[in-house]
Length: 382
Image (cartoon, rainbow, N blue to C red):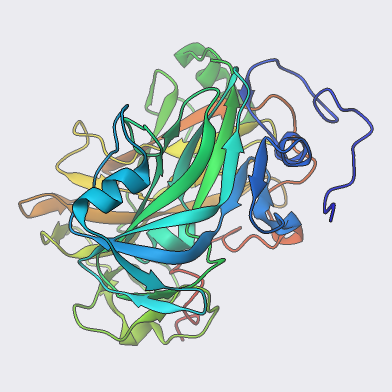
């Protein structure tokens, strides 16, 4: 069955502008039609996002004793068999326990050309549940990276860290971006883009820019209506079904954190926090963004496990942008975060063309115009 009708321009889709860069919606669809991206079940139209592809879990999860990379000489299943595998049928749904590591073969596979590489990240709702999810390929030497010309299956490593979860065949925990060539970037180009498109709503001249990234700061001033600055995950809770929407009471899983003017937040090691940036973020239609997951220059903590921002995020409409919600963990020791402290860096990269569809309500996007927002599995806090 053909789910994607052929475009009028087979050379790159409408609006192609550059030979190198992140591939947009219409070019990803072309790769599906050309079977450079293929799956054991039809790839659904709503899997294709403005600059990424949602990946789906297959029917079996293997519980393994440790995370691993296969290395040049082995496949993922070689390593799973070597470590000792414990298969779990998740076709109709099964619990994946926090503190355990699972390997799941995805429904999607790749047959990439010599100029196309790919990289992956957890979806936003995955990161907000503190599900540590990484992509692995056969003979891979790095997580979340697919080398140019790769032919083979894809696997997800899944390690729930705060909540035990229910997942099933077809659940979408991570997403793939594809890149053609090696586009160049510069600090000067990013400064021009910030001036033209106001990527973050900092006052002109106050932005912190380095190389191809722009800094964002923490908001501890609090939401005007609720006075909240964040949430800290509870230690002992029921499981969370990753495919449910607006189902769970937030207070069963989270402790709200109220604003305390003039005082910061001390991150407890091993606790998980949801916070938000002071700045709103806008991603113009011809660019995509990614939050740097960990930066020792910012402090001994990790921000944003789910780092993709699609073209159109926070863009258009009132022009006010959308807050970037941060998934935060401290490393090893307690760490003090303060209001307006730089907590992350947004890396921007151009697309080869403007996507036919942009992030927003028309695409069913969950977090457009967001403020401090929990994952889509939770009801709105009353």
